[in-house]
Length: 506
Image (cartoon, rainbow, N blue to C red; front, side, top):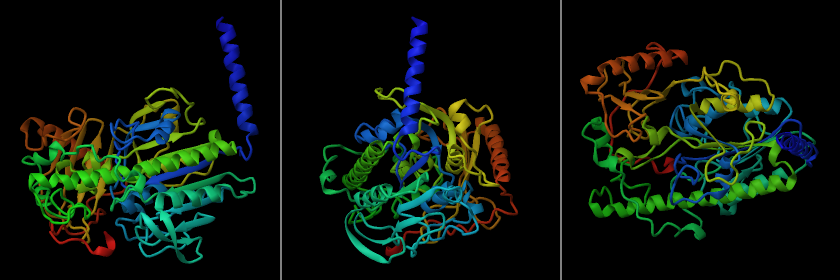
């Protein structure tokens, strides 16, 4: 009986391999469908355990592939994080340290490497590096984007450098239609890399009409941590009534602000419901694209990556937006479906097919995709391919890493941040930028037993030894990526300010 089962499994394997080899349009090298969301929280998806947001198409990618439980960005800000995903480098190395800087032409990216190795490459959607530039960027044979943030409805698109024109419709569907149309072009037998940059679920949150009232009956309070700030740095209380605080305008969902009355939580709930609503359209988009790949016979020869660029604070510690080194800000979702990385498991289960527990970073994406595609590696990068980790385990995988963010005069609500996170601990400090001593209280969390970061242990003498160890680890991690006291340049921390940011850059 055992021999018969083994022979049956062998025949099934041969049949699947033959189907893949003979699939119309299939290439010996895998295609890449890269789907990037803007500001999507790690827990805003069904497979991640959200009890309200139903995302069956994204969940299926996780069930049939690999989900990364501890996936993090190295700078929680859109442009720096996107540049790190492309390059495998930290922000101080690639130079995109704010939301207004172009991706430097001197730095290669994984799409450039794929293009040079024979891939047909395309990008559709929000590029978000260079606010006023909607022209094609290097590394892509076809490029469709817009200036600035784009709009949920009726964005002005520049189609491959042909000039800006308004295209009516909901952003998520428009970008999906662009991508589907390109997908069905003749790629001359080449493997392809198709990248989609969704606007969703970035503020300001506007679901399409069919999802506008989906969550109306869901009650959403402020998180518990918003009211426990006594052991936190004072700047977090100062931020409460600002653009990035829970009593502020909430991306214009609160019209009269600041408002710290109990009744004002209704505005927070309305904002969160709208945020969730935009994600449902993204899930529809994923379903449409996967169905198209299946129709074309390319599904199992395509690496499908679904991920976010950074996390999002949604009331944690009294904050909204991102930028800080707290878990909700730096943790992101990522799932990859590709039989060449991990064979489909538990397809009918509610759980992901394979869950990776180790800490994986945005800088690891580029080297991993290039390895899977058989393309030359990018030299001198900070990231590491996770292919071995997923397939066989990697005893040398990281147990700690650096997070950093620089104070922005345009958004003066977060100090300079230098932090280190290990498997068990997180240490955060806030250098002033002038070489002097820190003016803000530091933070220490046992993220293994206190993942919501309820208790700041920095002033507890019991953990003085841990603080010293983490300070040494921070220094070590900084040095590993080329940052020392002499080279770590940052702006002056001018403090938390109350003014709203310029309307053009919100």
